[in-house]
Length: 169
Image (cartoon, rainbow, N blue to C red; front, side, top):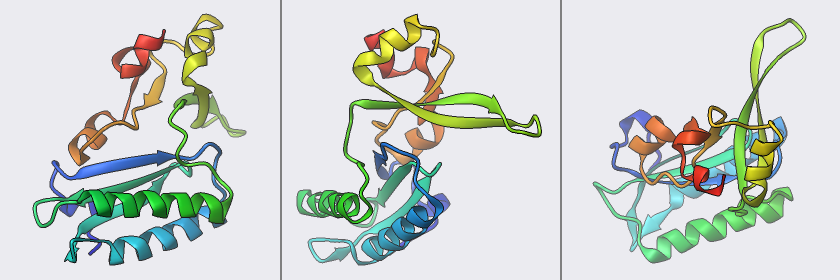
Protein backbone atom coordinates (compact mmCIF):
# COMPACT_ATOMS: atom_id res chain seq x y z
CA UNK A 1 0.00 0.00 0.00
CA UNK A 2 1.42 3.35 -1.02
CA UNK A 3 1.10 6.21 1.44
CA UNK A 4 2.19 9.83 1.31
CA UNK A 5 5.67 10.40 2.69
CA UNK A 6 4.27 12.53 5.50
CA UNK A 7 2.11 9.60 6.67
CA UNK A 8 5.13 7.36 7.29
CA UNK A 9 6.75 7.23 10.70
CA UNK A 10 10.18 8.86 10.97
CA UNK A 11 11.62 5.42 11.82
CA UNK A 12 10.54 4.07 8.40
CA UNK A 13 13.40 2.44 6.53
CA UNK A 14 14.71 4.01 3.34
CA UNK A 15 16.85 2.75 0.50
CA UNK A 16 18.25 5.26 -1.96
CA UNK A 17 19.51 4.40 -5.42
CA UNK A 18 21.47 7.01 -7.33
CA UNK A 19 21.46 7.16 -11.10
CA UNK A 20 24.83 7.70 -12.72
CA UNK A 21 23.33 10.27 -15.11
CA UNK A 22 20.54 12.80 -15.11
CA UNK A 23 17.29 11.09 -16.06
CA UNK A 24 15.13 12.49 -18.84
CA UNK A 25 11.56 13.56 -18.11
CA UNK A 26 10.29 10.50 -19.98
CA UNK A 27 12.54 8.20 -17.94
CA UNK A 28 11.34 9.80 -14.69
CA UNK A 29 7.70 9.32 -15.71
CA UNK A 30 8.31 5.69 -16.65
CA UNK A 31 10.35 4.98 -13.54
CA UNK A 32 7.64 6.47 -11.32
CA UNK A 33 4.96 4.34 -12.98
CA UNK A 34 7.08 1.21 -12.55
CA UNK A 35 7.95 2.15 -8.97
CA UNK A 36 4.33 2.74 -7.98
CA UNK A 37 3.27 -0.57 -9.54
CA UNK A 38 6.03 -2.39 -7.65
CA UNK A 39 5.26 -0.72 -4.32
CA UNK A 40 1.54 -1.41 -4.64
CA UNK A 41 2.20 -5.14 -4.91
CA UNK A 42 5.25 -5.40 -2.61
CA UNK A 43 4.73 -7.77 0.32
CA UNK A 44 6.72 -9.44 3.07
CA UNK A 45 5.62 -12.96 4.01
CA UNK A 46 2.28 -12.25 2.30
CA UNK A 47 1.76 -9.13 4.45
CA UNK A 48 1.16 -5.85 2.66
CA UNK A 49 3.97 -3.34 3.17
CA UNK A 50 3.17 0.29 3.87
CA UNK A 51 5.43 2.17 1.50
CA UNK A 52 6.33 5.34 -0.31
CA UNK A 53 8.68 5.82 -3.21
CA UNK A 54 9.64 8.52 -5.62
CA UNK A 55 12.25 9.87 -8.01
CA UNK A 56 14.05 12.92 -6.61
CA UNK A 57 16.10 15.51 -8.52
CA UNK A 58 15.86 13.40 -11.72
CA UNK A 59 18.63 11.24 -10.27
CA UNK A 60 17.61 9.37 -7.11
CA UNK A 61 15.06 6.64 -6.45
CA UNK A 62 14.06 6.40 -2.79
CA UNK A 63 11.97 3.54 -1.40
CA UNK A 64 10.49 3.78 2.10
CA UNK A 65 8.83 1.11 4.28
CA UNK A 66 6.94 1.89 7.48
CA UNK A 67 7.67 -1.15 9.61
CA UNK A 68 5.10 -0.34 12.27
CA UNK A 69 2.68 -2.50 10.29
CA UNK A 70 4.90 -5.14 8.66
CA UNK A 71 8.65 -5.38 8.44
CA UNK A 72 10.64 -5.80 5.26
CA UNK A 73 12.17 -9.27 5.38
CA UNK A 74 15.29 -10.49 3.63
CA UNK A 75 13.20 -11.93 0.80
CA UNK A 76 11.20 -8.74 0.32
CA UNK A 77 14.39 -6.66 0.32
CA UNK A 78 15.81 -9.04 -2.30
CA UNK A 79 12.66 -8.43 -4.38
CA UNK A 80 13.27 -4.69 -4.21
CA UNK A 81 16.91 -5.09 -5.30
CA UNK A 82 15.83 -7.29 -8.23
CA UNK A 83 13.24 -4.65 -9.11
CA UNK A 84 15.94 -1.93 -9.15
CA UNK A 85 18.15 -4.16 -11.31
CA UNK A 86 15.24 -4.63 -13.72
CA UNK A 87 14.91 -0.83 -13.95
CA UNK A 88 18.60 -0.59 -14.83
CA UNK A 89 18.08 -2.95 -17.76
CA UNK A 90 14.77 -1.44 -18.89
CA UNK A 91 16.02 2.16 -18.90
CA UNK A 92 19.70 1.56 -19.69
CA UNK A 93 20.90 3.34 -16.54
CA UNK A 94 23.07 2.46 -13.55
CA UNK A 95 21.39 2.68 -10.15
CA UNK A 96 23.52 0.36 -8.02
CA UNK A 97 26.97 1.95 -8.25
CA UNK A 98 27.88 2.96 -4.69
CA UNK A 99 31.24 4.57 -5.54
CA UNK A 100 29.89 7.79 -7.04
CA UNK A 101 29.27 10.77 -4.76
CA UNK A 102 26.58 13.21 -5.86
CA UNK A 103 27.06 16.86 -4.99
CA UNK A 104 25.30 20.14 -5.70
CA UNK A 105 26.91 22.96 -7.58
CA UNK A 106 25.29 26.37 -7.38
CA UNK A 107 24.97 28.16 -10.70
CA UNK A 108 22.89 30.82 -12.41
CA UNK A 109 20.51 30.24 -15.27
CA UNK A 110 20.20 32.55 -18.31
CA UNK A 111 17.97 34.95 -16.34
CA UNK A 112 20.48 35.18 -13.49
CA UNK A 113 18.38 33.02 -11.15
CA UNK A 114 20.14 30.70 -8.73
CA UNK A 115 19.90 27.04 -9.72
CA UNK A 116 21.58 23.97 -8.38
CA UNK A 117 23.07 21.32 -10.61
CA UNK A 118 23.86 17.84 -9.40
CA UNK A 119 27.15 16.28 -10.45
CA UNK A 120 28.98 13.14 -9.43
CA UNK A 121 32.55 12.33 -8.61
CA UNK A 122 34.03 8.94 -7.86
CA UNK A 123 34.59 8.47 -4.16
CA UNK A 124 38.26 7.70 -4.77
CA UNK A 125 38.69 10.98 -6.68
CA UNK A 126 37.01 13.07 -3.99
CA UNK A 127 40.28 14.25 -2.44
CA UNK A 128 41.64 15.27 -5.84
CA UNK A 129 38.45 17.27 -6.52
CA UNK A 130 38.89 19.14 -3.24
CA UNK A 131 42.57 19.76 -3.95
CA UNK A 132 41.66 21.11 -7.41
CA UNK A 133 39.14 23.48 -5.82
CA UNK A 134 36.14 21.86 -7.50
CA UNK A 135 34.66 20.93 -4.09
CA UNK A 136 35.18 22.11 -0.54
CA UNK A 137 33.94 21.24 2.94
CA UNK A 138 30.85 23.42 2.38
CA UNK A 139 29.82 21.68 -0.85
CA UNK A 140 26.53 19.87 -0.31
CA UNK A 141 26.71 16.11 -0.89
CA UNK A 142 24.01 13.44 -0.85
CA UNK A 143 24.35 10.81 1.87
CA UNK A 144 22.61 7.86 0.27
CA UNK A 145 23.41 5.72 3.32
CA UNK A 146 20.77 7.33 5.52
CA UNK A 147 18.65 4.56 7.00
CA UNK A 148 15.35 6.15 8.03
CA UNK A 149 12.82 8.71 6.85
CA UNK A 150 13.89 10.96 9.72
CA UNK A 151 17.53 10.83 8.62
CA UNK A 152 16.45 11.35 5.01
CA UNK A 153 14.60 14.53 5.93
CA UNK A 154 17.31 15.83 8.27
CA UNK A 155 20.59 14.85 6.68
CA UNK A 156 20.28 13.34 3.24
CA UNK A 157 21.91 16.49 1.89
CA UNK A 158 24.73 17.80 4.09
CA UNK A 159 27.96 19.78 3.72
CA UNK A 160 30.88 17.56 2.73
CA UNK A 161 32.67 18.47 5.96
CA UNK A 162 29.77 17.03 8.00
CA UNK A 163 29.32 13.84 5.97
CA UNK A 164 30.87 10.40 6.20
CA UNK A 165 32.57 11.20 2.87
CA UNK A 166 35.04 13.52 4.62
CA UNK A 167 37.18 10.57 5.69
CA UNK A 168 38.22 10.26 2.05
CA UNK A 169 39.68 13.77 1.97
